[in-house]
Image (tube, rainbow, N blue to C red; front, side, top):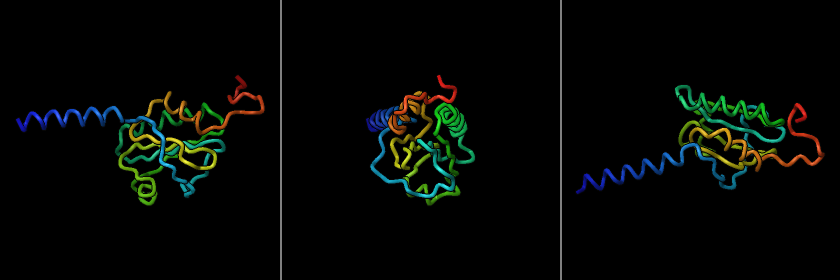
Length: 143
């Protein structure tokens, strides 16, 4: 009986954790006026915490790099979690990859633990990047 309860409990916990993997969620209201060691993007910044042997970090780097190239004024910064433990503690990073989406003021708008989907990152940028009010296209090709 105890074994069955343990098995069911472990399975449920695994399912819950798996469903949260890479999901972008609203961040607690925490100012991020800290020095990441690099300048922030003009309109938004995608901050990725990684480690050397993190396999999903490589795919996340590729996705965030593509999104940063797609949206003008957005910058991707990758932070080595092992060498920046001060930032890991400040932002409560518990695993890699962890992604923080910052607005132009450097405030955290969304965060994800695990590998986020490209579509989710683009959608979250909609909250971080203010709408273009001058009537010009946001795409560098004018499309």
